[in-house]
Image (tube, rainbow, N blue to C red; front, side):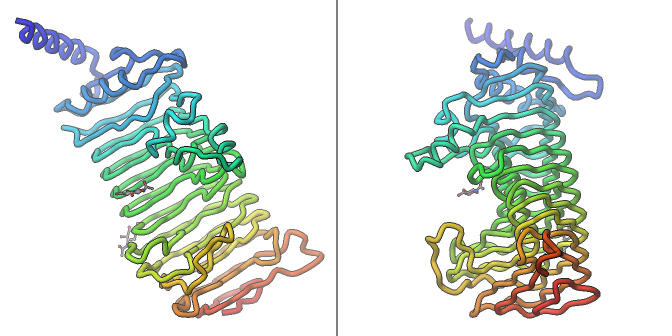
Length: 394
Ligand SMILES: *[C@@H]1O[C@H](CO)[C@@H](O)[C@H](O)[C@H]1NC(C)=O
Ligand SMILES: *[C@@H]1O[C@H](CO)[C@@H](O)[C@H](O)[C@H]1NC(C)=O
C-alpha cells in the first residue's frame, strides 16, 4: 500500500514537472521546488542533488534551474550519465559555507562526474577562499583545498557566462574530459592567492576557452599533462602568472601536451606572459606544436619563457628535465616587460628544445630609457623571422 502511494506521488510530481516545462520542449527542474532556499544560510546541497537526479533521469532534454537568490551548498558531485542533455541554468549565486573544511577536505566543491551533453549557463559562484589561503600562508595544517568547478570524465560540455570568485585552489578543473567549450567567464581571486589557477586542463582533448577575463593568484590558464587540441582566444589575463603549459615532468609516465594555440589575448601585470615549464627530473613527457600569437604584454615579468628548471620554492629535483619540447612558435607578440628578461629559453641539456620559432616580436623594458630588454638561451634550437626585439639568441 505504502509502495503504491509512493509511486502515485512520484507520478503526480512528474506531471507537475511536465506542466512547468519550458516551451523549447526541455523539462525544467527548479531547485526551489526540491527544497532549496535562496537565503544564503540554509544548506541546499540535498535539494540540488534531488533536482539533479530528477533532471538527469529525464528522457527529454532537461534544465536544472537556479533562480535569483544566494544558495549555500557544500561539496557535491553531480553524477552522470544522464538520459539526455542537461542544462544547469543559474540566475542566482552559489556560495560555500564559511568553514573552509566543509569543501576543503574532498578536493572539489562542485563536481560533475561522467556527464555528457552538459551546459552550465550564467550564475555566480563564490567559494570564499580567503580564510583557507590565510591558513596556507601561515603554514598551518590545512585541508587539501577544493577546486570550485571540477569536470571529471565529462564530454561535450559548454560553460558560458559564469563568474567564479575566490576559489580555494583552482577555479575550474577539466580532467579526462573531451569537447569542452568555455566562453564569457569571469574568474576573480586576489593577486597572490596561492594556487588559484583560473582554468586547469589535464588529460583532455578538444578544449576551447574564449572571451574571458581571468584575474587570479596563479596561472590564468594552465595546461597540464595530456592536454591536446586546445584553443585559447581573447583572454584578458592579469593579475596572475600568465598562461602556462605545465608544470610538466611531475611523473615519469605522463601524457604529453600537443596542438595548443593561444591567440588575441592581453596580459596585464602578470608574473609571466606565455610559458612552458617543467621540473628538472627524468620524464617521458613532451610538449609540441604549440603556437602563441597576436598577444599584447603590458608590464609583464617574463613575457616569453620556457623554463625546464622550474623551481618556484627552492625545493626541486635539480636533474635534467626529460620533457621534450619542440615546435613552439611565438609570433606577433608586442608590449612591455617589467624585467629585462623579455625572452628566456632555459632548456634541458639532455633534451634541448627544438623548433622554437620567433617572428615579429617587440618587447621593450617598461623603463625603456634606462636599459634594453634581453633574450636568454640555454640549450635552445630554432629560428627567427621578421623583426625580433630583443635580438634572438637562438
Ligand atoms: C584528474 O584525475 C586524476 C584521477 O583520474 C586525479 O588523480 C587528479 O588529481 C585529477 N586532477 C584534476 C586537476 O582534477
Ligand atoms: C588542433 O586543434 C584544433 C582545435 O584547437 C583542431 O581544430 C585541429 O583539428 C587540431 N589539429 C590536429 C592535427 O589534430
